[in-house]
Amino acid sequence: MTAMLDIKDLRAYYGQVQALHGLEFHLSEGSMTTLLGANGAGKTTTLRAICNMVRSTGTIAFEGKSLSGKSTENIVRLGIAHVPQGRGTFTTMTVEENLQLGAISRSDKASIVSDIERMYDHFPVLKQRHTQQAGTLSGGEQQMLAVARALMLRPRLMLLDEPSFGLAPLIVRDLFKILGKINRDDKVTILVVEQNAQLALELADTAYVIETGRIVMSGSAKDIANNEDVRKSYLGY
Amino acid sequence: MELFTNQVLAGIATGAIYACMALAVVMIYQAIDHLNFAQGEMAMFSTFMAWQMMQWGVPYWAAFVITLVLSFVGGIVIERLLFKPLAKAPILTNVAGFIALFAIVNSVAGLIWDFTIKQFPTPFGSAPFLGSQLISTHQAGMIGVTLLLLALLFFFFRFTRIGLAMRAAATLPESARLVGINTSWMIALGWGMAAAIGSIAGMLIAPVVFLEPNMMGGVLIYGFAAAVLGGLSSPLGAVIGGFLVGIFENLVGTYIPGAGNELKLPIALALIVIVLVVKPSGLFGHTVIKRV
Ligand SMILES: Nc1ncnc2c1ncn2[C@@H]1O[C@H](COP(=O)(O)OP(=O)(O)OP(=O)(O)O)[C@@H](O)[C@H]1O
Ligand SMILES: [Mg+2]
Image 1 (cartoon, protein in one colour):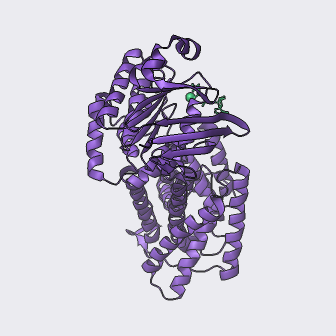
Image 2: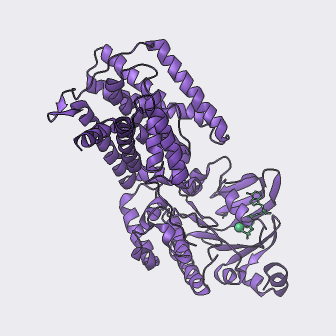
Image 3: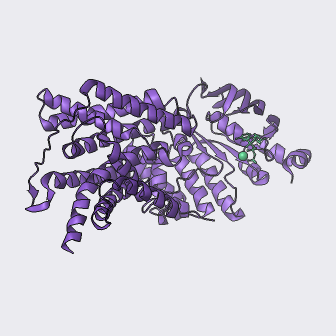
């Protein structure tokens, strides 16, 4: 079986600065994978490279097809939703408009309406605030909105950049529960970048550890969580 | 008091011109964050196209609609050919592009149609409106068209998916791309719409100022003043700004001794500066609500 996402020899550059040095990894279909690493390791850059938001070389294949040379919007339209670091909320628009924007590349109007209702079931607080300007939501609510907006694409693959950032532990648990449910029930393959390694390893089935632009460790999430050396040297807990 | 009311009414009538132009200015500003200095010249060129068609015997409204469509396409073509390559260039390069466009459009129009002034017809007639000597049917028609345009734009941006996509692309291009919006085409679409709106402004202004290649010079500056006053991000603000500038211009001309016609333009410029200093977001520019 070919991997859903297959990345080989990925190198990424910010001007002259090289941020990724030949990254290799793959995601199998239906998996929930976490990419862990310290600040500045290159996690965000990896996600940005997948969506062609940073100059990169190497091969990235999605469902067997190369993504190279494709624009960000066309990559997204293939079914890759990306919740960026900082959430990317359209703060001047209403909650509902944000959800509609998530589905802007779809043409099935009727199911867009029912999908918005589904998001309100997942995140009831968004329903209460659906006419409110998104910029006035709390950090946690905005994170939920960002996840919901990404789901409105009906993605095959979802990339999340530190969804737990700035959230209270209880809310993070809720959010991760929902991600698990989406992964299982909707068969969305998920790649989640996290600083909160402990929680991410509980949630994910596969894990990669990245350090200064290279994968230094990979394996099942359980093995990595149980390996004290790895935890101490790379994950800091 | 009667004089005052009259001048306000007359101001609203001239203000409709500025409002129309300001709408076009705001459209482009929303899309690319720059003021298009060539906007007036583009509108003038569109108006000449309409005039030419009428010379060839095309009826007014047919010429009007064809001009609208040609201008829309023309705006997109200009963006694709001239400004898309400049998208990542510094501001000054873009400004140079606008000035080049200004000069090119102006001289091409002069070359084709020469610089003698021409009559341009009005579809509304020029009788007194409802028996009032202050405002003609043409001016009333112009106010009506401006308000209709505003309503259409409001509807477009609020209730259509493409309008939503354009707003998203204008406010947060990166996030817009991440939901699959082709932001580059949204910019082109903004140019097309601005060119079409500008052509309407040109065709409505031409019966008042006469048609010639330099007809839009002063009007565009007032349009800028109106757009800045309204807060460059809001079509409603642009229209209200346009009416306010018109009223202001008339009142100054009437009540400030010696202001007359010569000082009207400096006053518009002063207005731009004052707004930028006192309230840079304008009267209706949205102040983004931010949480701390
Ligand atoms: N816009 C940029 N210009 C120059 N260098 C950059 C830029 N963005 C990131 N970098 C560099 O690339 C490297 C990887 O950054 P990246 O943002 O991918 O790290 P990260 O793993 O996501 O870190 P964090 O956990 O802090 O978000 C860092 O050394 C960073 O300084
Ligand atoms: Mg990061």
